[in-house]
Image (cartoon, rainbow over all chains, first blue to last red; front, side):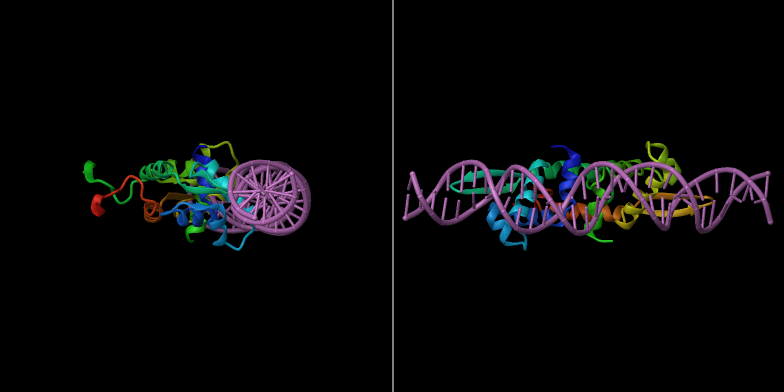
Length: 94
Length: 94
DNA sequence: AATCTATTTAGAAATATCTCTAAATAGATT
DNA sequence: AATCTATTTAGAGATATTTCTAAATAGATT
């Protein structure tokens, strides 16, 4: 909830890797866990951080909890970065 | 030096605020410090983190050390974010 | 209903981060 | 050269983060 949590969530390499895994498909907590050498409890902790940051959404099916990206928050972050100019995204102001 | 440091650097609210201050002008460490209720030592610590992340560049003039944004690294981060799609930046692939 | 499977929660240990005070550097001014 | 000003470095304390093991939930299967 809020920018500070979002940036905190993004600051961990494991969490960034989870986001990349979710880039093009929904995955359950267990499937995500298989990609790491960590206990399920730790993965669950990271997922909770990502959820708190609104970077992912969850849905239940049978015994599983599926996670997917919440694109709209990525867009907000991108927007924050645009204030620093750089490669003049669109050339409107020239 | 490297993505992990960059994201770590961005995870602190004080450091993000420093970046915003530097958005359109070079500032000395002292000038930056005036915007916060923290000792100069703490500001110096944050500047060192931003420097380590290559988010800022420094230059000396007289007694002062001036800091400015290093736009190229902002561009790299933006690029990382583009992988998550969202608001279809350019409509090439439709 | 008993048990199995998937996941989370609680609590603890190790490590990292942020902030301070005090001292060190280093260049500028007198 | 002595001192002043701007900033960093060192060391320490408080707090936060990451990870684990063990236990709790909760729905699915037998």
